[in-house]
Structure formats: C-alpha cells, structure tokens
Image: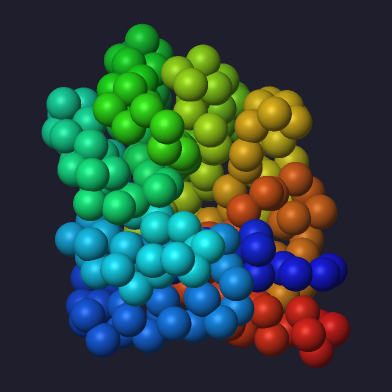
Length: 219
C-alpha cells in the first residue's frame, strides 16, 4: 500500500509525555508526512508551533479519556484547542448515557463540540470495546446526525482496540461520505493495512514510524 503515512494520526497521549518527546514525534511525523500529530490539549500550542507550514495537521482529544465531562466543558475545551491551533478534535462520547438509551443527550453532547469549532474536523470516539454491535451502530448514526466528520473506535484507555469487524460495521453504518478512524492497539503495517481495507480512512497509532517502515519493507 502506497503512502500509508498519509492515513496515520501519529499519537502521543501518555500522561508522562514530556515536551521533548512531543517535539520528537512532531519532527518524525513531518519527515514521514503523517496526516496529523495527536496529543493532549495542553500540548496543542507546542505542536502547532512545531508543525507550522509542514502540512501535517494538529490533532487533540476532548473529554479524554472517559467522555464524562459536562457538554459545556467539552465545548469550551474544544474551542480553546481550536483557538490555540488544533485542526482536528477527537472527542469521547458519554458511553454511560448511550448505554442508558439517552440518545438525545449523546447527540447534543456531540453537537456542542461540533458547533464550538465550526470549520474544524471533529472525530467522535465511541469506545467500541464497551458497546454491543447495536450500540456501535446507534453511536455512529448519532455522530453523523450531529454533524461530526469521523467516527473513531477507541481511546485505548478502556480496554480492547481496533479490529476489522468494528471498522467494517462502522463504515457500513456511516457510508462513504464520513470518515472512520481505527485506533487502539494498531502497532504494525499488516494490522493497519487490514483495517484500511475494511474501511478505515485514518489510523490512530503511537507506532507510526514502525507502521511506515513495515510498509516500505513490504510487511
């Protein structure tokens, strides 16, 4: 597969990530020509500075990793991140509300973020590991109705990870005009390739360099 780097959101979300590590992943991502660098919100200004003019997008996470913040807090966090240079925002849904059938709450929660950052790309993390297939479908439909641009599998903090079944299900649900991001446990080229073939249009990974190197080696 040619240019797999263009699918990758090169990710560093560890709580102990240092500014030097952030600078390193930015330099690496520019060299590889990744889609974006995804970091926690406090590092958005630094990443924006590091990536300025590179063509690599600045991505951050909202309501991460539990998604249980009030909607107003998520919206404010997203707005501030966008003002500080974030191009893309990966928000976590309120999984408990979804599982309780409070679908209007979940939709409005997503809408709050979408409306706070008009013109920016919003990805909705549905935490597939915690959901039944029916709930995954419902979450994807709500994200689409709320005006989000992508649905995304996992934070990586609640167990599980991306798999071909979930990606195919999410792609079938949202159709061709919405993005699907596979994230959680994607550590090598073969895994990334299988997920892309199943319908993923982005790969979230902390092993971006290894995945690209695997593509060049043909494995």
